[in-house]
Amino acid sequence: MTRRKALATGAGAIAAGVGGHWIMNAGTSYDDAMRSTWTPHTAKADTDLDYLIHYATLVANNHNAQPWLFDRTAGRVTIRADLSRSTPIVDPDNHHLFASLGCAAENLMLAASAVGKGAALAFIADSGGRIDIDLAGNAARDPLFDAILDRQCTRSDYDGQSADNDDLAALAKAAKIDGCELIVFSERNRVEQALEMIVAANTKQVEDRAFATELRSWLCFSAAHAITRRDGLYAACSGNPTMPQWLGNIVFDFVFKAGSENDRHAKQIRSSAGLVVFATGRDDREHWVRAGRSYQRFTLKATSLGIRHAFVNQPVEVVSARSEFSKWLGMNGGRPDLVIRFGYAPAMPKSLRRPIEDAIVQV
Image (cartoon, rainbow, N blue to C red; front, side):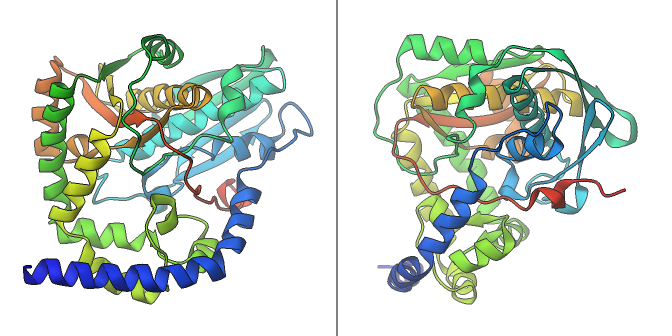
């Protein structure tokens, strides 16, 4: 055994041993916090801002940084980027940030439909870009709304089961947004080719000290720390052992290595039913928002069909890898925005959200 493997193995043993103790002593309180986050809200009126924001924020977002701000005028909700919660190393151009705003906008409109309210979205490029959603008229309830509270990014091994062709067609139909294309593949040779590019990009990220430092700043190793913060990435949500925050910061440096991370991704991707790439025809913030909307609709439909998903975004996050990945996909212009794996697996613990009032622009 090499010295690096010995250190990683030893650190993993420490993590597992201490983590088991902390799961037993802190898990219940985290479960309570999770249930209070992922719970139905009732609208006091069809334009109830708290109700709309509650559902809007239950979406995937980079490092669970929750980089959004909401404000409302008569009949309109505006979503803006909270750049103080950006992740500049992994997302230097704020691409993922604006995609997450698109996810939030889609959920907000679905929540409006659930109370019979129509919603129309416009992306306004002024001042860096914002999303205006006008609430007017009547709308039929979109059944995708019913999947919001069950949706999650499931960062675990899947069971290897293939997806039904009818389900794949339903997913593509649900995710259709103008300007956004879905590229779905489940053939093993294509998955292996994609995996090779994912691993190469992942190696570059893991070996970048700035990337590792930024990631660690968003990690919550203990339930108590996750409950206090209500953002970031809680270890148990990825199937990792929990432990005191100070110990987790030490153990992270031992175990976060390219070899072990690549092995983990390879195992998870090979256990998946396939991969989906969300791609847009133009590389600008408006289309990043569209990619987020398409992704959100896909994942809600997938949830309703019992299909799990998780991001494998490495080849679109590393600039040098993105160009190669785009060529491999056969794209002529535009940008591959998001990459996910999908398949079948049990649910994992869900992440928390900050209080709704923290996301509202105070005037």
